[in-house]
Structure formats: C-alpha cells, structure tokens
Length: 257
Ligand SMILES: C[S@@+](CC[C@H](N)C(=O)[O-])C[C@H]1O[C@@H](n2cnc3c(N)ncnc32)[C@H](O)[C@@H]1O
Image 1 (cartoon, helix red, strand yellow):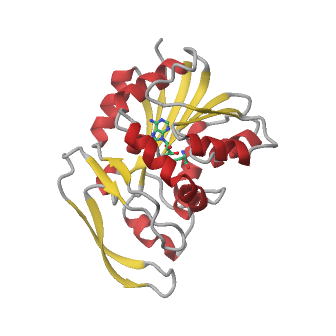
Image 2: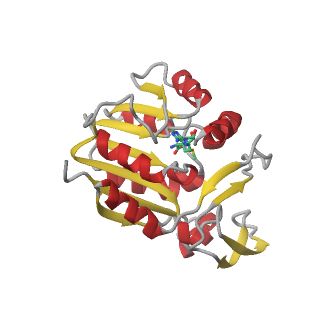
C-alpha cells in the first residue's frame, strides 16, 4: 500500500534534509514546534517514538533534552541520514512503516510524536491503531498535519497580491477553499530553499478534521487537546499565518487498555 510513498521519500530524502536544515523550516520553528513541545509535556526520561522521523532533527532535539528516543521512517535513505547526523547521540533509528509497527512490543512507549506524517500516509486508521497499541496506559500521542480546512497542499490556496518589500513574500488577499469534503490524494511539487524543485512530486492525503477525530476515537484514544497554533513572533513574514491557521495539532491519550 505504501510502496509509492516509499519511492517518493527515497527520491526526495536529500531535498527534504536540506529544506529542514537541522532545525525545521521557519514555519516549523515559529509556528508548529513550540506547540508540539508544549503538548508533549515534560518528556524527560520518557521513551518517545518519533514516528516518520524524516532526517531526525526532532529526534536529536528531544534526545538532547534527556528523552529516550526511537526514530522510525519508511525511507531507508532518511534513516541512513538520521544515523549519520546522530553519531554522537544514543538514538535508535529503524526503517519501518508506521502502519505496521510489528517491530515494537505492545505498551513500549510513553510518548508517540508523529509530526507532519499522517498527511503523507494512506493508512490513517492502521497507523493510529498501531500508535495506540505501542503506547503504555496513560501514554500520549501528539500529531500534526497541515490544517485540513486551509490546506494549501490540498483543496485550498491563497489568492496572492504583490510581493511585500518587508517580508519578501506575496501578500495574502484571501483564502480560497472548495471541495473540503472530497477526501483524496493530491500530488504536490515542493521546492527547496533556493526555489529548485524536489526530485519527485509528493502525495498528500486530504482528510477532514472530523475524519482525524473519528479515527482517533475509533483507535481507542481520548482526544484531550486540538490546537491551531499561531506564529510565536510578530514578524511580517507570517502575515498570512496570523490570519489563517497553517497547522492543526492533536493531543490524544490512551486512557483504556
Ligand atoms: C514531511 S516529512 C516529516 C518528517 C519529520 N517528522 C519532520 O517533522 O521533519 C514525512 C516523513 O514521513 C515518512 N513517512 C511517510 N509515510 C510513512 C510511513 N508509512 N511509515 C513511516 N514513515 C513514513 C517519510 O519518509 C518522511 O520522512
């Protein structure tokens, strides 16, 4: 089911690694990551599964803060990059599919972080069931997606105006969205920081907010927080993201076994 996803990420592993540049894009740094960190609570001393870890910058970040991190990614190239970048840290990195985490025993993690992965994954229900299984009682899942209602990688887009001399970005006139209820796979061409296209297009799976919510509850989770994080800085660069949320973040707990 995930073979084309595997191929896309194998092809784009170097492009993605360069894009996040060991710390995430400005959107990650100034909007998403502070929210995710807050929702994880105090992770020190806990065992955390970084599910779909990419090139591993979040695994390295949390390992530096005393978290026992295991990173899993479907892409062999990504995992090779993770290992290369974390030579001086004790992080376990494994090739694996989040839709079948048979390599982990039941109840083996206190925390699961799945950052910007489920929107690239066709098997949402299976992944959430696996996260529930590998979490301990009272374990916490935090996952993020690009906001489905304002999804520039799906059924939405900004009508753009002129380039702002301050931010270098084009001003957002208004946001256009249609066919929100049509859940389907979109192909997106990403660009790197220089504007050059990634090697291959990516799959993005658009789903409604209620689909995520229902899948979480069906997997057994209790949803405890839903956040639409705003930029943590007043920078004019984020003019659009202060008006319309870019990310959606869920925190869910395993309160039943
Ligand atoms: C947008 S990147 C996010 C990476 C990382 N979580 C971050 O925040 O930088 C999506 C990652 O999910 C991985 N991925 C996609 N589908 C997967 C699956 N079924 N199982 C494991 N990893 C998957 C890709 O290989 C890619 O590294």
